[in-house]
Length: 113
Image (tube, rainbow, N blue to C red):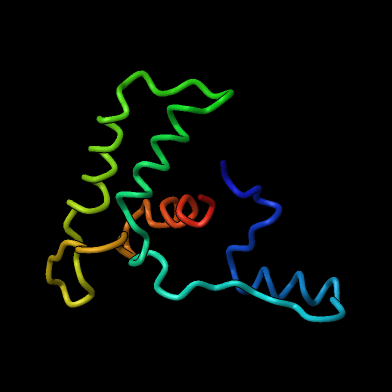
C-alpha cells in the first residue's frame, strides 16, 4: 500500500503554498526524518516488500518467484556501485543509498510497515 497522493507533499514550495492558502490556526507540525535512506534496514524491507507483493488480497502477484524479486532488490540497492560526488565509485554498506532510484520506495515501505 502507498500513501495516497493527496496526503503527500513532495516540494517545500508546495507545502508553503498550501499553508499560505489555508492559513491554519494552532500548531502546524512537519515530520522529517534525517538520514532515513541510509538507515532503512534493507533485509527487513525486502521481506516486507515481498510479503505485500505476493500476499496481497486483491492484486495478483508477479509471474516469478519471490526469491527472484528479492535478488533483484538486493542487486539494485546493496550490490549496485554508485558514483560519489568526487567521482569515486562506492557500494552502500548499510541502508539504501541517497542516490538510489529505489530509495524513496524503500523508505516508504519502511515507514508504513
